[in-house]
Image (cartoon, rainbow over all chains, first blue to last red; front, side, top):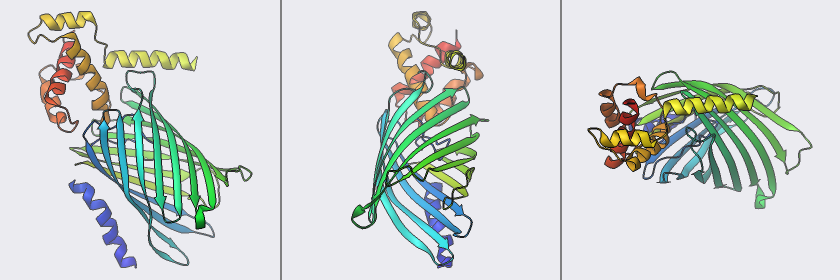
Amino acid sequence: MKKFVLPILLMSILPAIFALGGVRHFTFLYEANTSSRGSLELENWVTWQRTTGPGRFDRVDFRHELEYGVTDKFQASIYVADWFYENDREHSGFAYSDTAIELIYNLTNPVVDPVGLSIYGELRTGDRLLELESKLIAQKNFGPLILAYNATLESVWEGNHLAERQGEFSQALGASYEISPRISVGLELLHEFVLPEWHDEEKIRNLFVGPNVSYRRGNWFVTITALAQATDTEGEPDFQLRTIFGIGL
Amino acid sequence: MGLICLVAFNSCGTTSVVPPVTRELAQKSATGPTRVDLATLREGRTVFVSRCIECHTLPAVSSHSAQEWPRLIDEMAGRANLKPAEREAVLAYILAVHAQ
């Protein structure tokens, strides 16, 4: 199985080299501005998570997203396929995860208004999986500095007859500084409140923090974020690395 | 106090990068060699603050010369999916602010 890993990884990354809409300065946060009307963009996401400890495992998630500007303030996206590779002590392999649609509506501008705001909705379906996610996106630009904040509420139903349910509230904070027209560097912070069965008895809190860098040229960009877990939650990744390649079509 | 600082910083930053379109600015443009009206300047500012930030933060208009701006905008107009009229409006706004 391992001999297929590299070709599949390359296949997921190569389309981004050939084929921009909006550049992402963050990978774990969304920005308030939306794609312009009529623009079409392909984004390929790769997220590697490593969990250590007795149940050590690695997981690599892949996403292929098509993003379209319906109007200058409204964009729609399709996650054509979310799939993953998982490797632990007992087994390893690839699996399809889900397909999703995502809608973002921009309310105010992050440059001229006091705060740029957008609202976000996502519906995700897969094998014994249904997920709804809503998000409030806030952003403010101060010259070359971008500050962003996301508040996210997520509901997941999964398993047989979608009987298992889980909720999650998360907030993310990011800063990105443009050091040249092509390069930005910054920080991202992700704070999760996991609610199994929509209860908070277990008080599961995860905090991740780490740097990011974004490079853009022509009609493509690449943004990378490395996050380390600042809490000590068992079963949650100790390290995450996410890369997004985007290209205008 | 923090909020006051943030609002003050915000106002200064926004004003310096993208000054609002005033009647004075429009009058100067209307009597200048390119003769641009108020509506075009407003459209240019709107496009500048919404479309250009899809890829990068906004540079100060004074960071490039009036001769450099047309070439810079031409280079990015395709990427930003600007129509010819939008490209003209952005350039008109930038040159009007630059001439102030």
